[in-house]
Structures are given as C-alpha cells and as structure tokens.
Length: 258
Image (cartoon, rainbow, N blue to C red; front, side, top):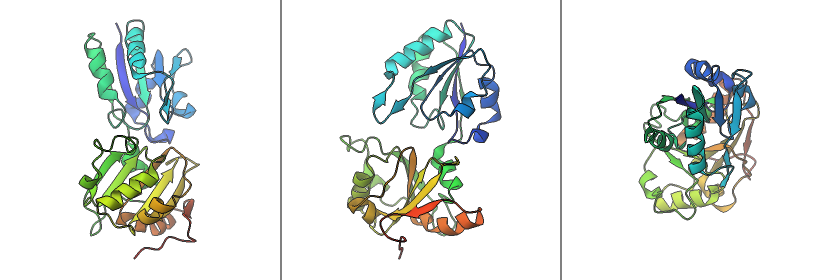
C-alpha cells in the first residue's frame, strides 16, 4: 500500500512551488492533477510517472469527485507514491479535506503539502496588498462559484464591513456578486480589481468599481481573482514601483475613486 500526497501547486508561477512540493513531485509514481496545474509544474515529475487529468472547468467535470476518490484509492493500492496535485492550496476550495476523509476510511496514509494560495499571492503579484496600515486591517475570502442558486450558503451581508474582500472563482458571476455586495451595504464607488492569470507572463489587471461591475461588467476571463476594497487604489503606484504591470480599466478611460 502506498501513500497519497495532496500537494498545492501554487498560484501559477512554477517558481512559487515549495521545496517540499518539488521533492514530492520528483518522486511521484502517478500524479492526478487539476486544470490549473501547468506543464512546467508537471515537468518536475520523473520520466516514468503516470499522469491522470481530473480537472474541472466552469461546472464541467472531467470526472465526478466520487470517481476521483476511487482513482486515488486504486492507485494507492498499486503505487508507492501517489500525488494529488491541486492549484493553489489543497485545503482552500480544493476538496482536499474530502479526499483525505475518503481515503482514511480505507486506511490509506495521507500527507498534505500546503501550497501558496492565489488568495494572497495573485493580488500581491499584481501590486495589490490585501492589508495596508491605515487602510485595511481585515480581509475575507469567499467563493464566487456558489453565487448563483446558492445564496443561502454565501451570506454577502456578512462581508459588508470587511476591509478587503477576495473572491475566487467569481468571474462568471461577477455582475451578480457586485449587485449582492451593494445590496448588502458596500458602496457602489468601492474599487474593484480583477487579476487574470496571476503570477504568470499572461497576467492582466482590470480596475473598476462595484457600481460599474454591477451595471456593465468588464470583460474578464478565468482564471481570475476579484479583489474589492480601498487597497485597490494602491495598485497603480505599486505596479510602477514593481516594474510595471499590464493594467486596463473597465468601460471608462480610467476608473475614478472618491
């Protein structure tokens, strides 16, 4: 019987893998990997490694979660080192806990290798600090994937007074999210940033505000992180200090903040 390693692949840049992640990947017998895991990350695996794609995209699952669980169990009974490779961190919207609990019922030993999460790494790489002295001393993270049809599970009013709100998987529902946040009490003038393909050479930052996103949302493609809060105002100056980043505004020539 082998061991299953749940490994966080980080936010996108392969150089943001942890040393332990590289070590585990480099000795993997089989890797079950998600959509956001790049070829560069998979390149750390040995030549004889077996790769199994189990990614999910916009509600379309290559395999249902139950089948992924079964595959992990089957490979753990056959191989010594089984790696479940997930974008970001396996315990942040990654179903890592579910997979470990399933394997535990069969006595399969597991180990979690945390990854650098897009929650903070993507905004940071785009010049957006999620906390800043005198501006933001609190932040919250929420999934935007459940915004449609599952309003009771995402209580937007709970985030009314959070200084910085980081929303993952919210591109498709960005207009509904903005409307829900305004309805919950956040100002329509509040700055918003979308960071597409963060920490990669294709990174793009779009600046807007809640009101514009609610009425005429900018064009944004997944994967992207949505950041709401006054810290977004710091992005233009910080991006210059960081060497310049690709940054566009939404419908207006430039976003205006009070």
